[in-house]
Length: 101
Image (cartoon, rainbow, N blue to C red; front, side, top):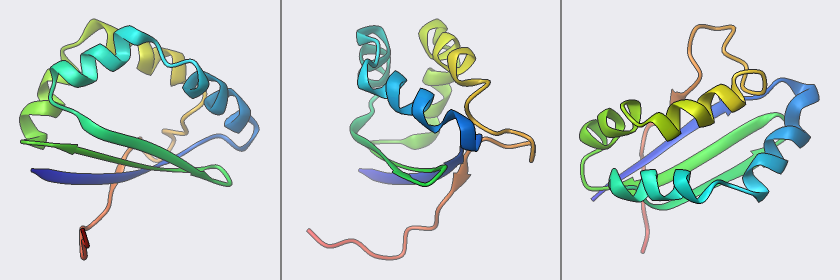
């Protein structure tokens, strides 16, 4: 099992919009995540930063499956004006340094 974490930067005036989309995540999006192998997925807000965590068996194949999903592409379009991609990247992956069960 792989544990993957990343940070997204939101436009400061779009935090509430991000919150609202995640209060009503499309069932099709959840189904696409599950089909790609995503388990135990959470997002946390700190100001306009999102800390996202997920587990999967193989992130490279999971990410590739998600990239090809029409539902995921629509979800990303929905968030294109919410997630700040001005730096050229939307996700900044975090180094896994410790885990306790």
